[in-house]
Amino acid sequence: MRPSPQETPRRLVADAHARAVPRPNERSWPGLAVAPESPLRARVAELLFRRAVRSLALRVELPDGTRLGTGGPDAPVMRVVRPRAFFHRLGVDVKIGFGEAYLVGDWTSDRLADLLTVFAERLAVLIPPRLQTLRRWVERGQPVEERNTLRGARENIHRHYDLSNELFETFLDETMSYSSALFDETSAAAEFAHPDADPMVVLRSAQLRKIDAVLDHARVGPGTELVEIGTGWGALAVRAAQRGARVTSLTISAEQRRAAEERITAEGVADRVRVLLQDYREAEGEYDAAVSVEMIEAVGERYWPDYFRAVDRLLRPGGRFGLQAIVMPHDRMLATRHSYGWVHKYVFPGGLIPSTQAIEENLRTHTALRVREARYFGTDYAETLRRWRERFLDRWSDVAALGFDQTFHRMWEFYLAYSEAGFRVGYLDVAQFSIAKPS
Picture 1 (cartoon, one colour):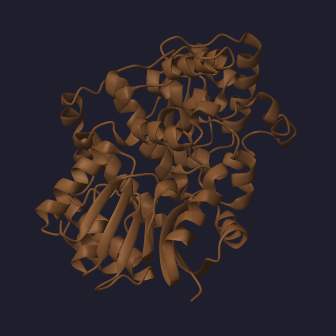
Picture 2 (cartoon, rainbow, N blue to C red):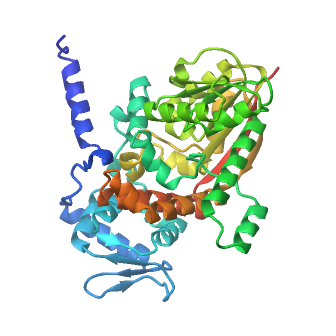
Picture 3 (cartoon, helix red, strand yellow):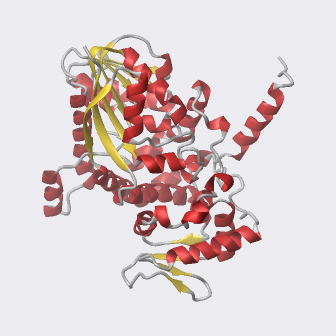
């Protein structure tokens, strides 16, 4: 069947977008190798960059011997290897160009997370206020093709979570939990006292503590009928079944479903857990409890009402919802919610991190659900990301054997370090919410 004349332009745009997005598992990095050209913007970007870093506690080194920043000998160092390409990338699109310049080696650092932490501490004031008012005229908006429609959500999830189950196995602990762990003082002290202890064993315990806390928020116990929105690799579903619950877990990642079902069978709980390849908007049934761990960040602001309405619809009266979500300050969310950044392009297309206020407003406006309790533990996420990053770097040879190239190495390191920096300085936080539906 031929497309209609009206559909043709839309399809051409969609095809062009598909060709332009990175495909790391295929070693495809469209447009990355050649820096864009914009002399005027590059000059402005250089002036702003020099002005911004001159008061930061770091050191910037340029090939001509120029040294910028106030950092001493112990401060993190940023080495600008190809300044012309670097400033052109910044000038054309600073939110994407800064990270892309790292991907191709225009700049480098031996202490990437520490360096990005210094930038993150001053993120809100790096650009002069008068220039910030021009943001909406120069920043790219999120592509229509990456909206989280039923079809778009599947494509967005596929681009990240279906990279390779084996890739995630290289740096996650054995629970395969791809969300913040919840550490306690006892385990931290034990690890400090025994420096030879396996850090991944400590991480596993912290991940199980996080899972148990979410299940506690949802009051999951023997006989509970539970729906999970976002299966991951199945650890939470297994843990809930071991408590005696009957679990229906929803995912739109075929790769994750396959791995989760293997884990569920291996743990001997296949009679109490079913994993459906299904979007939350398509879910049916009634449940005593619901849980969702760091899935809301992939929903997108436009679909938050649908997400919470789905939970409300699936819960029986008196039901509980255990939600773990990355959050950010409400004013920062409002300022950045329409912009398209490096993380969107290379890691999580279509995503937006909510604020606690946005979560509460959506619940109040669209559902009968209300937050009863909240627990914040952002520093634990910084620690989780540090462990992931160090393990990924230590096991790079295993990742490379899967077919990933050096550009991916720098991309994944930047992603983990960039995220760690955000949690270190409090620009990002993570919370578990206990949400109740009235009886």
